[in-house]
Image (cartoon, rainbow, N blue to C red; front, top):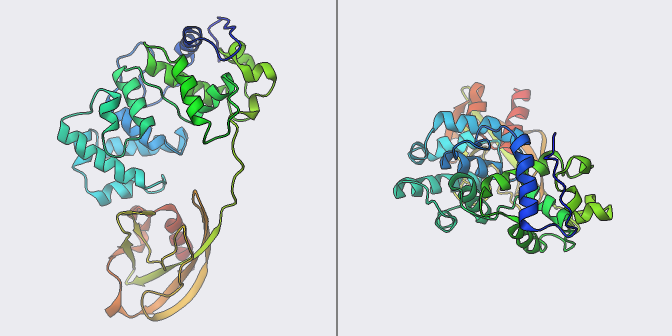
Length: 356
């Protein structure tokens, strides 16, 4: 990595112009090449691609998103194509990326944008779209439309909290972090500035062992001056996650397994899944099979959700009461990977296949 060669000496996080100039000079040399990004000096990227990438990148990493992003563009190259897509196809394509409400919001937003004839070019207009939170609206406004907007993701949060040594623990400290980011965001090149902060947090101002000697903002950083960079952002003590228990049921007939469609809202809403016993973030399942049959245990799969861990017992059925099966579809067992099961049920399916 290279720096701009400029020295920024401010002490409390810097004035807006000096920090912005130093960061943009660094970004011009060190910008990451990403499939949804226009490099410094290039024309602004397609708003659809910026929006799609930003929705996908929430709560996950660039490495995890690349393949999904390419798949979505291959299937739905425009927002109009995505708006016309079948819900089930989109949910299946999203499977494995997690936080499935994002996929439902993606469709709702695409359909509204198609109805409007395009993305609104302002942060306010973008914020009015279904499923677009403050961060995504600001990111699209700044990166795709060149608007001055304050963009704060986890990387920006870390950089700015260190730059200003903001000691208030998260999540309450986010108000001060956003205000500090607003202070240093320039009127021009706000999109490049936001992406520069993201890249700085990804490559230099990392969670552990930040590479302060390579940082273009090192001389302005209050946390570095105090030798406490790794202490920021300050996080409240984590609460222990509860462990829930549940059961999934594998009902197979003639080389096909029964899949159901989960309710449109709530956890894993709208996704194909194995029938289960009603487990949720709030409580354990009741462990009662959906139909009478010859059941036996195949084992347990474990999966971590944001607010709880799940131990899911898998039950296999050799003979079921076909007359009382729950509503669903039989999917060929050999092609189960193409069903787009969310990760926890994909784990259960792999366990079932190992027992066949």
